[in-house]
Length: 220
Image (cartoon, rainbow, N blue to C red; front, side, top):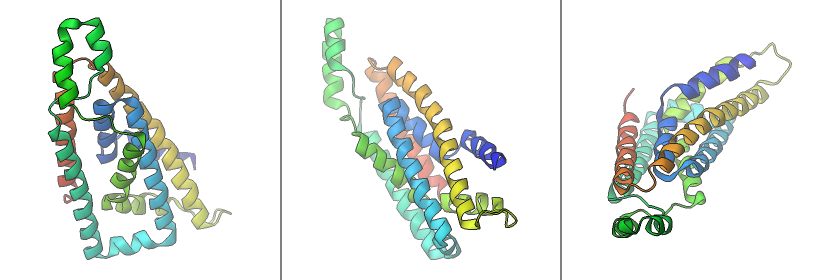
């Protein structure tokens, strides 16, 4: 089963909707926010694997109507996140520190506070990760094509338990790769913390990523 874990790491490294989502959220809100999103994505994988083992995922994938409804719901949620990001004309800045160390920036920081997005709670970011995962029908197709083929009937482990183990390995691999992305993007966010213009650009970057992800849901 080591081969599956290595394959899961490679899949996590490859550019995709989830790691782009983590990148956008970490760059905009910081590394801690990114890890909250990652925990949400991992919880979503737990739900998806549970549905896979129960056979529900196969039913959804086989129903064009159900699949299309999930696409629409997922796209609507991503466009909502894009709207929230585009609303922010400048990101949240550490106002107290900036105004004390640089009095000449006090006006700039005040403007950033007034226009910036309120810091999202860990709970909200965690829920974002869950919704991002379970509302993406392509995750269903991916898991259906990735986990069941790795099951071997000749193993002494029941096929359902094998799928659970593979799901756990996939979650660990996802956490490792996405955690690295969150740390790197969070470092960029920390470096640009006192630049309202940079924060504004990061929010626009997040908005564009959300729009592209929404469109990608309908592309093969």
